[in-house]
Amino acid sequence: MNAEELIMISVDDHVVEPPGLFENHISGRYRDQAPKVVKQKNGADVWTFGGSIIPNIGLNAVAGRPKEEYGIEPTAFDEIRPGTYDIDERIKDMNAGGILASMNFPSFPGFSGRLFAAAEDKDLALAVLRAYNDWHVDEWAAAYPGRIIPMALPILWDAELCAEEVRRVARKGCHSLTFTENPATLGYPSFHSDHWDPLWRAVSEENVVVSIHLGSSGQLSVTAPDAPIDVMITLQPMNICQAAADLLWSRVIKGFPDIKFALSEGGTGWIPYFLDRIDRTYDMHHLWTGQDFGDKLPSDVFREHFLTCFISDPVGVQLRNLIGIDNIAWECDYPHSDSSWPNAPEELAEVAEGVPDAELDKISYENAMRWYSFDPFVGRTREQSTVGALRAEAAGHDVSIRASDKGRFEKSVGVEIGKLAKAATA
Image 1: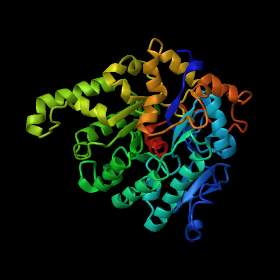
Image 2: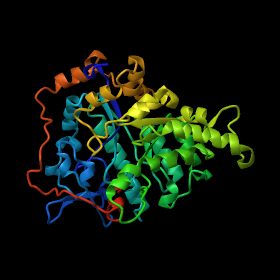
Image 3: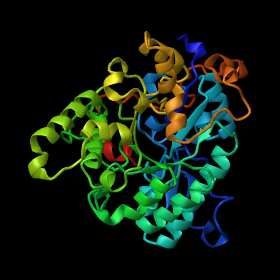
Image 4: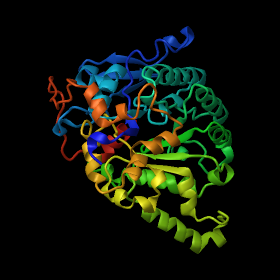
């Protein structure tokens, strides 16, 4: 399929939260304690909350920058692309990149909202988290119907309250909940505990997908403190592989047969081996480990419950039928450093050369619509939703690569994992 003819929905992008996020969504009682943006002496804009300082990590907002300026140093809002934090500019960037719709994971609260969960005052934390969700659903996503797949943050510290929040946002049309890939590393009960049952029941009944982003546990695969950061970046999908195994063998899927998970930014090329491995593990060991999937293989169960996602994964596309053509969705990862925006359509068309149109449609947008109960064709036809049509709407919008005007980015060579892993997963 020609790149201009594609229809593209990204199930993994990110928002750099704007400074005024909480102004219209939190009560007067907590207004002064809500997170706020403060400019530091070095010119960097940082979020502050409960004594914590959270910078805008450079790798989280490099869209429009040359690759030699990628880094993890703090940045100011006037140094990053407006589309990262301004919804009007985001839609222009989406149009220019040929992207019909996008699901946006959080930035400064952490992918699973663990910044708020760490607050000592849980009443404040609850007010802030609900205000964030209201902003995301009622303001960010609602500004352009059919363009942003709503996503909510979880209440990690209380499974019952989290279930209530799932039901509250589901009534607003939100069918995605970001969650940690491993609650145990954050000090909470694991997936193997019944602690989370109220949450699993709520997401199952409300048809909400539990979207698990790599790094959401606050840990990445680290081999040695002095290893170069390239090692950590290479091994990032291993976090998602671990989460998939943890959930597959847990009691969750057996107890909640309608539950759905998305493995965000985990890639797909490893999945055929993973499926072969879990089937062999089951065949060789289930009689003594006690695992029981009835008349199904673990690989069948995986395909019923897990959506897998890729940015550019030629091997995964070649092996798509071993993964399950109904279980694969495309992601852009705007504005992070793995993203190919604004040339993602050309990249996908090249990677998917020879893939039948019907299969590519599932990967590029239909699976996302079905899994997230999302209709992007609000006020527009399919013909008006193609890459070519969207780019025509964005005619004249500047997508050129530009170096930093202030020259504050520094090229980092041989950066050590021990110094940066925590910051990169904040």
